[in-house]
Amino acid sequence: MRLFALPLLALGLLIPAVPANAAPPRGAASCSGCHPRTAGNGPVPSLNGQPAEQIMAAMAAFRSGERRSTVMTRIAKGFTDEETQAIAAYFAAGGNAPAQP
Image 1 (tube, rainbow, N blue to C red):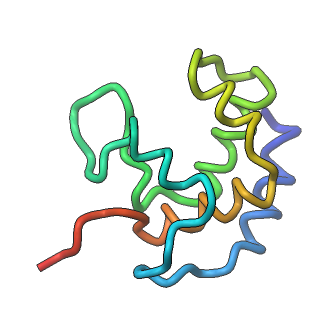
Image 2: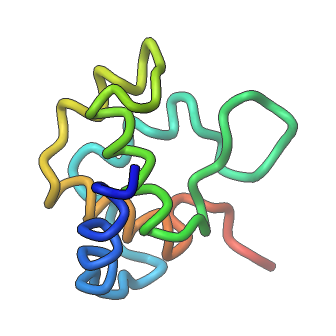
């Protein structure tokens, strides 16, 4: 995990801020099939508001096989580092969270 942590931390520093009303990057819409818009008690966490570095680290761990999951391992392998960065930045900025009144 340490091998992934430093490069991912460095990549996280390069992630531009994403406006809250930005269109989702390619691939991000598929996340909402399992990840809820808001935090709940289910087994799959919401990605909205999670730190981009945390999302990127999880995706790297799924991609490498360090973190196992029937579904996420396959999904993570389908994204490039650049796509993962864009998706992580989108969800870190609020992603598809419901609008606040």
